[in-house]
Length: 303
Image (tube, rainbow, N blue to C red; front, side, top):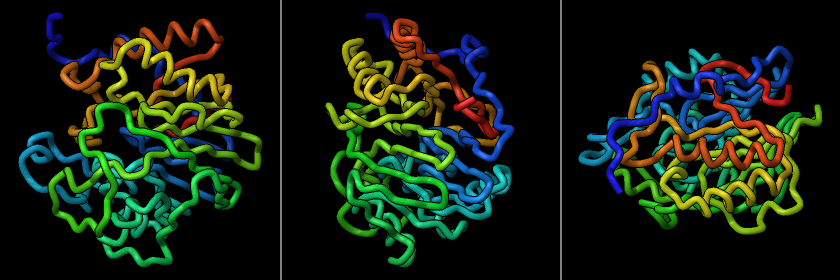
């Protein structure tokens, strides 16, 4: 098979950036990769909070660390001064590296598994701001109930395993091992429900019996999997929870800073065109709609 060069053209999917703008209290703001800000005007939560986005050369050849200026710029632009919780979907650098800094800046709890706790301790976050969850046990923050269900990372996992000691940056990217991967179920007192699936992996049957109207579906590396894998992933996430609207995340080139226009990951690492083709087929057959989120815009996927 001939190697595809370049990267998918997001212009082909311009009509998919159509999640309705939020006009009410509840909204979701996409901030790149799998970082989502969810707020209801009183309580705000964030997945990941990865905003430093170091270059590919730096990640491959040097040591990496959170970039305070980039983190502060994103929080300011997004209007974030307080968060109740920051929840890394797993602990690779492109999800968890900035999480403790964001938690510190916003007064939030850092929420996740034992690996997330070591990221927090490495930054010096106090233990009373680190919350190690019991899988499947609901947590409440304001009007939100969160349930973290064990999941898997999409293959291949380039930095597998658990983090077993505090991560004190700067470090090589491999210090951010995957750790615990999560499917995060969100319920709001308004009745709105969502599945936040940060990585395109799954544990068979883990979401059976769970419900979510909307699925924020991580698709990083999904386009280089077999079609059978894509179909199983859809079945184990979207179909399992009965979602009627799907919003795709983790498709953007996370080596490019957020103050520049987003672009898709290159074909060398993923193929968004394949992902869109297969997921569209699955969505059409089951009456589900597939969308792309617009960075910085507060949206209401339940409208």
